[in-house]
Length: 199
Image (cartoon, rainbow, N blue to C red):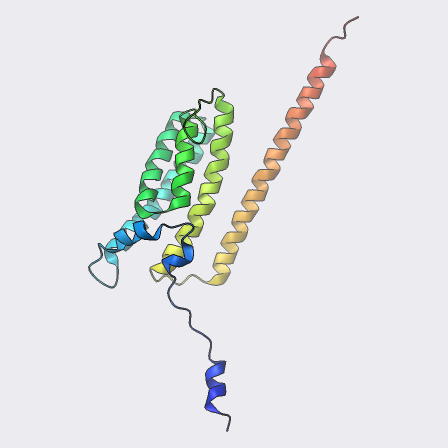
């Protein structure tokens, strides 16, 4: 008979529940723990309700942001950024909050710090478009972690698929931006060629 130790060694290690300290770079532990302190039971129903309510709120707000970008509505984008900034700050979602604050400032025709005026609406819209994509990637990481934290069994392959989709979207956006820049350069060259030559 094989020694009992070998049997133990072959047993797969069980991973414990995810810890807030594992994601200290994207979630402020102290702020989130204040939400957890409101729970009356081990099921964490109260805080779970707040967090899952935020998931719905964030998805709806991102959809509105994308529409506002398409409509070139800077005022609406500023107020949407301000709205989601407050919700994410309450939960301690630092990256999401910081990104939403930038959107708020860009929508108000300022730079990302809110200290300098940006007179060109097109530049503000470009910056918002880029920042919305960045915030959505940051939000996706936070959502995955929190769903696991509250006991959802997310399969690793599902997470990997989501991450690949995010990278694919980012690359697609980069290609589109590069194409836009190429077209602008072509138009500049064409306009130069059309200019009447001075005798």
